[in-house]
Image (cartoon, one colour):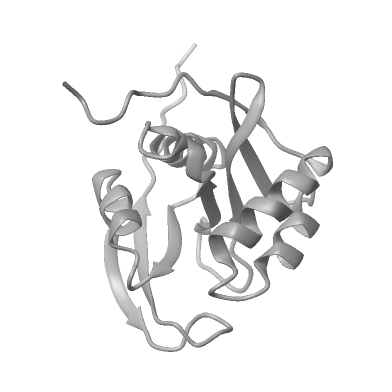
Length: 166
């Protein structure tokens, strides 16, 4: 017997209409780390940021945001997983994993070299999720978050899909 049933979430593109949901979930999920409930909704619909929303029974249950890293780079850039969160009522059913896999697929379409992220050094559940999807820890960042918590920097290479020859 499984302890948690798997979700049948539907993934869709997020946008400005999801601002209230993103604000509320960011407040719940990230308030210990900083004012992400003020930052993340501003990125909805912004060029260079892709948002994926997971819905369960027609109601939003989670979201993930992927953005392009700014600054100089040689060749293709890395994308950054800016945020991923799942509502408490919908956790432990595979929604977080589905959101991470979808942003990896988006990164593949963007043809970036890899996906980078930071997660709280105390968030072992997230670290296991990311490691299970091919992310490797690269560094520890003391005082990374605005409220002073440390983070683990992780990265995953992105496979380049070859185009079919005609």
